[in-house]
Length: 311
Length: 49
Ligand SMILES: [Fe+2]
Ligand SMILES: [Fe+2]
Image (cartoon, rainbow over all chains, first blue to last red; front, side, top):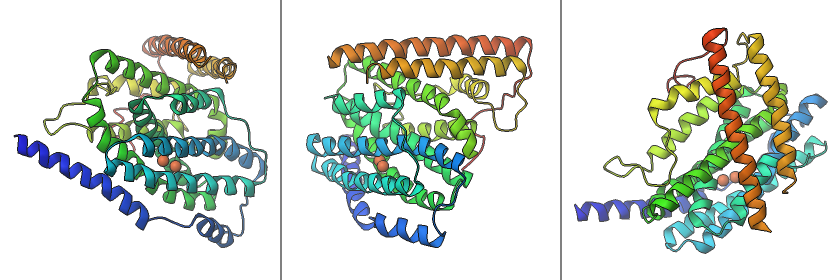
């Protein structure tokens, strides 16, 4: 029993170190990739309304990448096990690349970069400010990275614009390794959590998820302009999240403490919530639903302003 | 100052969570009485890839 446990731990550390080596092998030259894609497609050709919508969505990604860059640098500094340190160090390089490629892309779009909304601002600054390693790992590596991966897939799938569509898989491949760092390393940190800390961490996750949900409402019309179906995105995001959390289960199938794991029996609540708040493109929307969603849209702007007060 | 800001954002987020739950309950009630909205089966099976 004890031997198995040690063997399992050893395997995990080997995997963590591998994240670094794979990262080094798969490192891509952002300048070259973006330059080639722009040349291949003859620049970024998009009508102005779509350009603005793209800038709205990708400005949050731009600041998200900047935050991820700083947070992974924090992790590289604070993590004690050298294998995890290596994985975090490799992530720092990835996020720096993501940041400058996204910045260069947005500059090429040639339209104003909107300020960060209150929801994203709150999530990112709190992850940056916290001294707690578990909060950073869980919030950034698992929740924010998963949202990013889902969004990258949605953008690529919607075929918004060929340069960004072909760029997304490069980002996605890197982000998958970052999620890997969280999945492999978090259980060790979570194992030491007491019940109060575990409850606090769950509330923290609920806070992040709530803010992301309202933030999506705020940006809804931009997603619509780009032909991105949030209903589909949320469904895929939920599945991805479950897969990620399953990856953190112990060999005995137990969930680590402090993680907000969706009970499969509550899945139908999620399905109802997604379909009611974010009807699928092309779905028939009755008048009462349209009315309530209108209220939700307005409330999302109120919340945005309230949170910006603290920015 | 950071603590004050955090308490404030937590307060706002808690309020927004509550509002979200109330709206969900309200819409579920409308769906069960008036109906008409499209509710699709489990996310786990839906829309692969
Ligand atoms: Fe990134
Ligand atoms: Fe990342």
